[in-house]
Image (cartoon, rainbow, N blue to C red; front, side, top):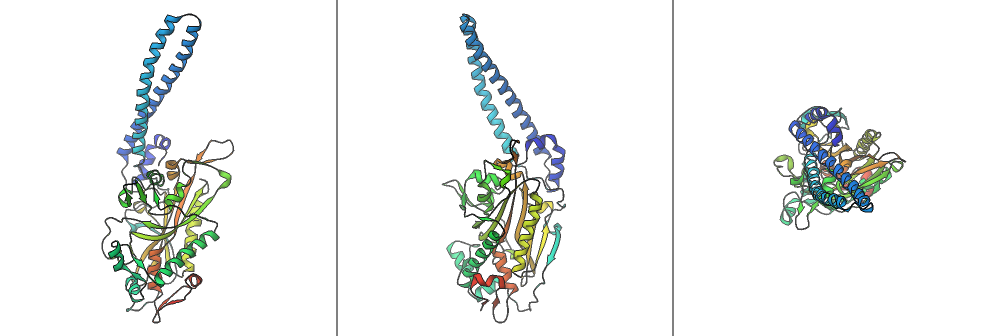
Length: 423
């Protein structure tokens, strides 16, 4: 959530920076400023009335002590009417605060000043590309056909059990999933991240804390009877561990990682680009999360990006790094790098990781602050990244490593799979 003080002092800057995300926020900013003014007016009136009541209570006591009962009774009656007025003012002030909050949560995060302008993914900036694309022949198969040939993934049974987008992994396909999860977790722990196993159902406060609500409400699975949401990523519960916290700056950085299944409705996704593992409703992912000092968060972002690139290098996958343009960024992000791997049989790039800095946006929603000595607490910066999401990694591993003998397993992964070839 944007800080109201910044909006109040820099409304034109907020409007112009949100325009980079292709959002005309003029009307919403004006409404927000009016609500902020009303809230502050009511708060001031409330404080003045409270001070008047407190002063009169002391004065009533002094009048009674000095024998001025008639004057004391008159002031007491007047004070009682003020208390009735106070009750209404408190209610109005609470409503004004809620109305302001309801507007603030509709405002996306401001993009970092380095974010390129653009409306579509085609306008993302390619930072670099690494690795050779596999020289596959014309008879190469896409991963969904390879999965069927080698009995790795049963898409049809997943449809029978649940529906499209919920595959069943079998045999070496299931073993490959487990191997990748353990490989990614071990890499993260070695890099200094503490492993967390969080809940996969979260409450509304948690969804608001990281910005999934209200922006992505329609994309989340909802357990209505219990008013809980299935998580779209481990970022949500792990970051919310620190909600309503004041953290000693000396303990930074806080680095956590976690494996969870992830659930996304992916409403409106149709066509050939969603075949096989390209777009699922349930998938596995290892996430990395950092709580950082504001002065160090962009250094941390570059380190997280390069860390994910290092894993892709070990998996021997050709990849590229993109800096997302304003129109392709998420609601909560200030700056995002996407990492994509090349899918040899589909001959297209597949996103496998997003690494983002949210600056104070999530911290302000969660009331996550830093404290140094006797200094006034300040908002932390939060970051997260996929390290990595499994489906498209598996798709590329299967497609890029297909040979006449079977599917070759990258050397770094063999200790985890226990086999070097799927055949």
